Image 1 (cartoon, rainbow, N blue to C red):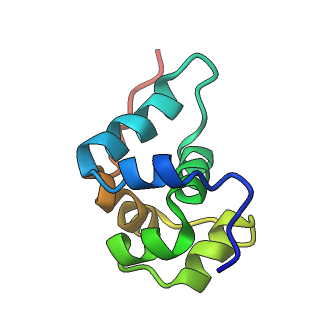
Image 2: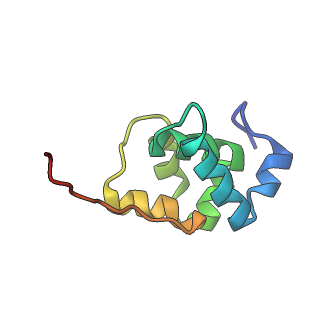
Length: 98
């Protein structure tokens, strides 16, 4: 099977642990360089492996590949499907501007 160049077998194995995967993903967002949610997902999925992420998320591999390659930007509902393996979901908050 052909792997993305960023695939790391040891990290992919560690990312099978939901708690570790969540902390890794959140670290990408909250870190010094702070990735946005989609970029953090792409980064994490590439390290997990598309096939492996498909298995834990229930999302078809082709759909994941399209998202990774920037051809499809997920809706909020779809984004929640991508976040589910990490025990996360989106939340929209409106605030009044002063």
